Image (cartoon, rainbow, N blue to C red; front, side):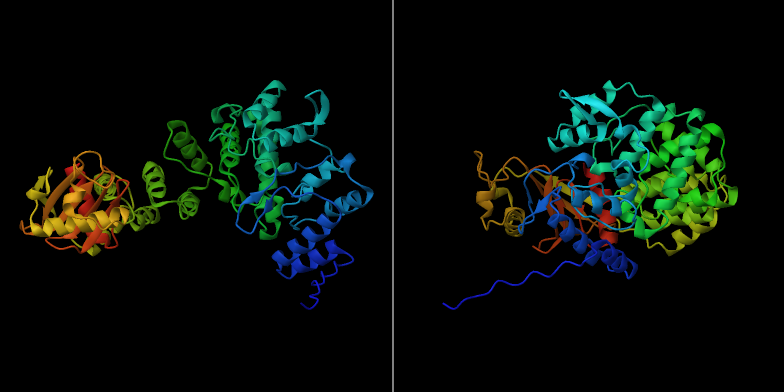
Amino acid sequence: MGFKPRPLRARPPADPIATAVDLVARGHHAEATAVMHTALVDLGFGETRVKQADGNWLGTPQPVPQAEQLTPAQLAIAQQLARVEGISVADIAIPPSAWCRRRWLGIDPGGVLERTVDFEGEALPLWRALSILQARNAFEDCHALISSLGLSKLELLELFTDIQLGAYRLRVFRSFHWGPMGFEPFAITEVAAEHEQWALSTLQRITRLFGDSALRCERGDTDEAPSVLCWLVMAVLVETNTPVVPDWERFVRAAFQPANYVELTKCVLRLVPAERRAPVLIDWLQTRSAKFAVDVAMAHLQDVPSKSLVELVLSRCDQLEAKKKRSVLAELSRLSPKVVGIRGPLARYNKRRKPPLQLKILRRFTPASVFELNDSQRRQLERAGALYDGQQLSASRRLTPGGDEHSFHGYLKIVELGDGQGKHVFDLFEYNVDSGSIFKAGTTDEVAGIIQFGLECTEPKLKEALQLVLEDYT
């Protein structure tokens, strides 16, 4: 065997930060991140997580070290990075944003996260204690530690804001009161006029951070301002009756439940100039799911009457489940005489809309034996079973009593569906409670399937008709 030389590693640039800044300016963000990652690893900084070739994460994440633990070389590059925005340090265990790096190193005054707390017999900054607990997945202990500090509501707001914007890579407190990492310091209705300065400074902060795409790493690597942070800010604006200026419009959020969020939405929209309310609402809903967008728009349609808002609802209606769609259209018809902007768009929608397919149940039965099936039903059952578990088994095996794992005995229902004139057009085979196949009558041509109670069908018109008849059937 001949000698196989190892590939030479590319020599790192003499000034990695200047190189990264130049690459970012030219739009080469991935290359800039790679340069910084290499430079920081070479200086001995740890990684918060290491991804293996198989996609799994290796080892225990390393928390961000304290500034006094850095070597002189590490401190020097950290101080340089503290003065440069827009450079991603990827998964290196240092604060991901320049504003947080300045507080980490003591260049800027610290906040609640930089306060010293007693943690397991050691005096540590709060962020470091939370990082250690987070590395242990001890989120309840994080919440207990925060609760033990006796922070004021304003201090909790400041703490919450920093973590929402990615401080020290902390995930605890990111989701407010939703999920295992959430922690609800107080209800959204408890923010008050006394928090006005916090709200205004937070709006200035997020307006800047979310106004420039180059600053993604400065805002917790998110493309959209955190919703809960926006809700809290807007709640203060409502308390202080502060008008929403154009730069703040992108942070207006909307809800259709619970009741206090609906009321807050209405109050916030009143702070927006009348001619801008519908556009603000529509802008927020454009990227939401169809159901959420329709529910929110319908909840506020009477307070924000708008042809554009009605058109948004109608444009998303065809993405709804049939029963929901029918309910929304009926509600629009009911509101049409009373709410400006509904009549025209609804009339045009109904004119374009093709009449829905009419399906009805002709017969349904639960076979206990293969002898109750005709030849086509046996073939359909065999096909349905194969689609379900991939096993090519006989109809008799599929109806074998006694707990066979491949048997549908006791859990098979057959429904014959007819069109508006009563002609037999489809056969529904429902099995194991939440699954099923729908075939063209008398054939094994599957036109739709049921997976975990959800109807799968590529033909929208047929899907709507099947949803309606299945709702009546169930």
